[in-house]
Length: 304
Image (tube, rainbow, N blue to C red; front, side, top):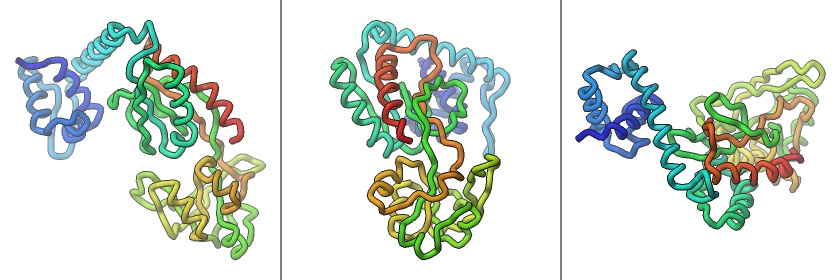
């Protein structure tokens, strides 16, 4: 007999992920199994929910209506299970938290360990990734994000802001002279940091110190890396200037291995936020972690 709840979940995954292949990976199922279960759901309903081709996937009108209802049903089931487990009455259960790798290790891990000591009935799965996980699809209760939040379905609590800094090794600065304006960077080699690294960065954006207008400076990176740690390490060795979040270079700056350049031309700092899915009522385990974390992070981030 077809499991309609499972089929609803798989349909939602296929649409949200954009393909059967990505949905199969997220569900940890063989691709033919996912395709078969969606086909069984369509046969049961007597209508086509998705149109497939070798180049694109589209949702039919009937599929859109069914998917909207399926989302509500799945959310209601999730809420009912949480309520039955007592998650709205006492702070207990498994809590899934995600954060950027270095930021999580430096700032969130101490909070998590103190939280575990304070709440012995809560266990935490701590997912560190510089690629933003999808909170709903990846079943994450709360995430720490640095940067603007594009998903309007998320609820955000701002706890601070993070500077993006330009920095370089003293020996490199001595060799090329200390830059006074962004245009002076033309004589410097650079190290680019990009998570995707689909193409090397070609410009860095700054903000005019007086007019606050955006300034685009062309760069030709000698090295492009997918982690800030590599970019900072290369900058320390004098390979080139690099631009990273302040916390990513803070240790090297404090030790004198790197110097911050052009602070008056830095772009607007990015918000640091605690985010969770927009539910009417949060499980108590999530609420107490949110409250426990917010104040501590605000205190930690006052130096940035």
